[in-house]
Image (tube, rainbow, N blue to C red; front, side, top):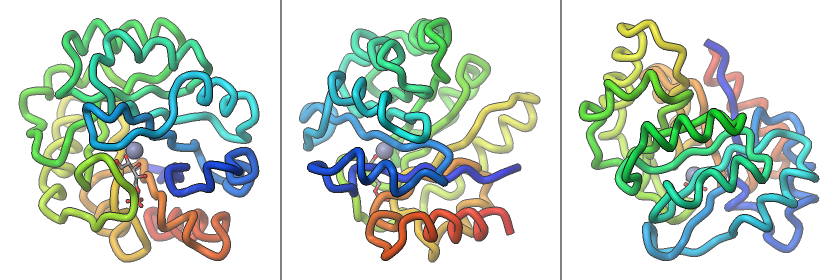
Length: 217
Ligand code: DX5
Ligand code: ZN
């Protein structure tokens, strides 16, 4: 399976987002972390900004909502032009209804799990989504170190998806770098979010190519 690299603009310069999106034109998607200071202890950006970023980005937007009440807010991000909208299983009241609404609006629908949330209760819902996001750090901040204990969950998710014959992407987010990406790919992930690794590199574009090569080798 081809590896997709989605740099997180959480590690970009918030005063130069258009420039920093231009620096990752060889990425598959730009990962946009929306935080509300409630679901996670950090506040980033919201709908009006996402709407503008969708207009200027050279690559489609992969929006990761770390917010309470995604049932209410997530559809607006699909309407704002996000190609993919991921909400947290821990926060959604009606995940199936929400996933169907996102797809109806033309976006890919993603379901996210915190590191300590087991995948088993959600296996039967995977047919309703396009992507499962396994958080590999506690959501809220960039630059944290990868939690190795999430690897078995990635393996179980990938196996369940294969058993069910589904075409669901498995995304990982948090602590992805040249040091960790090979074992994460080996566990079955195919979409890799990387914030500090990409934007902390001298050449973000070269780092994207290097990560993609390691994940596919
Ligand atoms: C964390 C965010 C991540 C973050 C990853 O809550 O969801 O997308 O930007 O940052 P790194 O790649 O630096 O761990
Ligand atoms: Zn994220």
